Length: 115
Length: 114
Image (cartoon, rainbow over all chains, first blue to last red; front, side, top):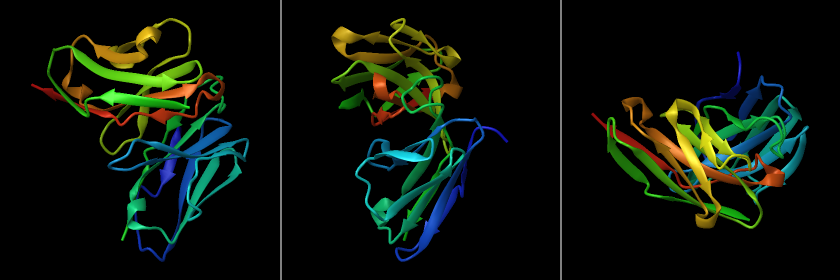
C-alpha cells in the first residue's frame, strides 16, 4: 500500500458521539495536515504537524482534537460535533511543511455526516 | 496572509476546445502557487506548481499555467479538452517560507461536453 490512506471513508455520527478519523502515510514524509472541505466554503487548513509536533492550529474549535503519535500516523478525534461540521475531511502529507522537497499528497478523505 | 479567487465556480467547454480556468491570488510575501484536481470521491492530485523558477509551468495531463506577477494571476490552460478532464480544479497559494501550508480558492467545476 502506498500514498496517504484515510479511514473510514464515510462516517455518520450523532452530536453526542465520540469518533476518530485516521490517516496513515507510507511516503516517508515528516509533515502531516488536516483540511476540511465543506460544501459552501473553500478548503480550510485545520492543523499541521511536523515531526509529530503541532506547528499550526488554524483557530479550530476544541471539539476537534488532533493526535500525531508518529510521523506516519495522524488522527482527528471528534466529540460533541454540530451538523455544520459535516464535511469531507482530507489528510495530507509532505516531506517538509516549509515546502522543501515534495509537494503535499492528499488522501481520499473521510466524508463525515453529523446528525 | 494569502488568499485566492477563482473566477467561475462552473466552466463548461466542448471536447477539443481550449480550457481556461482563472486564478488570482493575493500574498504579502513571495508566493508558491499550485493547481490541484479532484475527481469525484477522490482526494486532491497535484497538476502543477510554481515555485519561483520558470513563470510558465507545465504539469500533468497536458495542463500548463503561467505566473504573472503584474496581474497577480496563475491561470490554468489546456489546448484541447478531453472528457476525462471533467473534475473540480483548485488553485492554491502558500508563502515561500511555509510552502506546503496551502490556502485554497473556492474551486472550479469543469464540465466537458461531447
